[in-house]
Image (cartoon, rainbow, N blue to C red; front, side, top):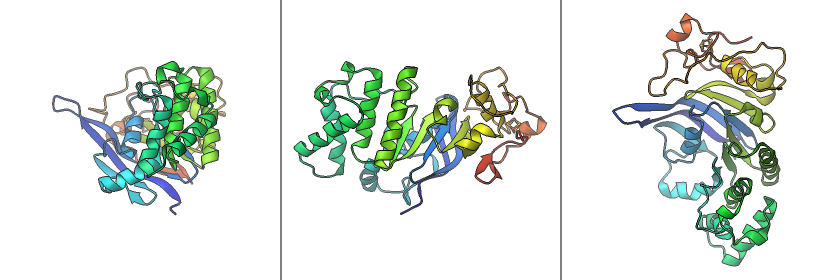
Length: 317
Ligand code: SF4
């Protein structure tokens, strides 16, 4: 059994944006997730987080790079093998209501993933689905209802239940709480944490909000405009981060204790386009620490101390 359940190696994703333009959504991104770990992937909207999640799911296959799941490169396996492997890595999407089929009732929604994993009779499928409804906090008597008859938080619980029906090893949660009220967010995060322990899951938790990730993840990777900026254990990242972008994200969170480091505010202006990213460091047009070298030379993602990686010429020390 592989120690790293997932390894993303040198992942690059480009797609056409019309008028002969190519969007460089993700460039040479590498990270790994060890078995049983929760990794946070954080950055502003449009930085490539969801594109990476979909590439791991092979929806579609990436432009280049390797996605190694339990020792097998998903970008190279046959369609048949991918179908066999798919139940073992599942995804929870941001918009819970639209990700559920409005015409399917909940029992059909939950039993559908079991069709992928071999022959199970309908009675057994139904029993497993009702059991799963209980474990995500939905009354099983509501199994004949359709998604529009539930609240956003309940739909997210149903979506999580659907993802777990095939008993996956890896759960990819793409902004699972960002469309929910703050009070419901905490409930869903607690539910995910409980289910992670019960099912022995490994998780990739994607969010634009470092405050949400803080209590969920063992390690955090911060992204900006398709590139990795910083990677560290949660404890290190919140206490002694080195990248100005990480610092700026944390500075923007009210009442977050981040130690004695000074605040860093992002310079005013829009996020540059991934069609034509800035030369050198992609963050330089918004970085308050930027110098001439930042425009000329792309910073290398390097290990600044054991287990702590950063891509910056002038890290905060
Ligand atoms: S390399 Fe330069 S522009 Fe980029 S984050 Fe570091 S200081 Fe800022």
